[in-house]
Amino acid sequence: MKTLYILIFVGFVATFIGTLSGSGGMINFPIMLLLGVPVHSAIAANKFANMFSSFSSFFVLLRKNDTKLSPYIISGVISLLGGIAGGLTASLISRENLTIIALFLLTCALFLTFLKTNREKDPNDEIKQLPPSKYPYLFGIGAYDGLFGPGQGTLQMQLFMRNGFSYIRTVSFTRFNTFLSCTGAVFTYLWAGHYMWSVAIPLTIGSICGAQAAVKLAPHLKTKQVTILMRTVTVLLIIQLIIQWR
Image 1 (tube, rainbow, N blue to C red):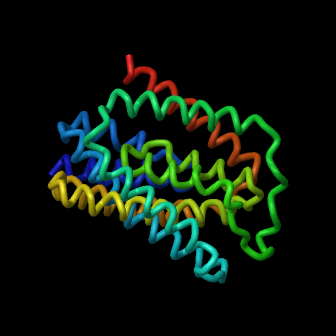
Image 2: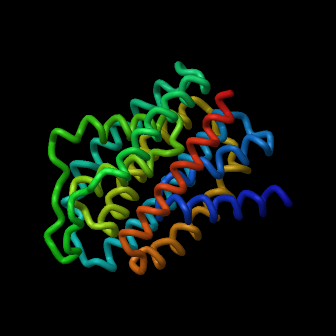
Image 3: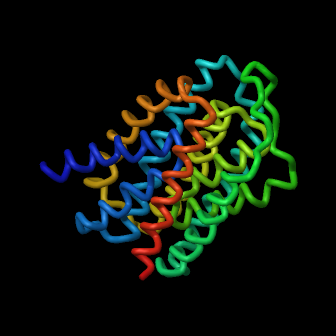
């Protein structure tokens, strides 16, 4: 029973932070390992929880901003295919190598936060699409999400914000794409038989609650506050990954 409450609380905190700045997986993933959850089952539980929590937060943002679903379709399909590809190859890559990949990607993401970004668009403007030249990056982030996941939200938010998306729309696109990349990964982990439902379900309950709390706070954050939050989370993730790698 104690473990049940721990997982609900961890799911809430991780998804609350992950929705606002990405990388919530680096909070719940190590804690699941400390609780004795096998590594593949921990990743599987994280994908399952993210699938539901990301869709719930995206749905709220979609209704609140009175926007259409169609602009999200292309990026969503790319993320879905990436998630499937990542999930299928998860068993072929060691956790140590995934940690090295994550360190490289997160260091690049941190560097990007110090570069001048494009001016944030008016939230009332028509939602734009990512340039086609950015699709390989989006696919790669989706594949990484299916493989391992922690840090993908930060990378994806950087991708959208550096291409002129407002913060709220960046969160919307990131949550929708995370929903689909996790959905693709969930089916591959189900097929491989990695799920421990006693872990996945309470983590999902906490994650859904955390996502709903975050979307209520998100409209009140300013770009400067978001940038500081993303930099702080990214630095902490890099430090944590270095400790794990060593």
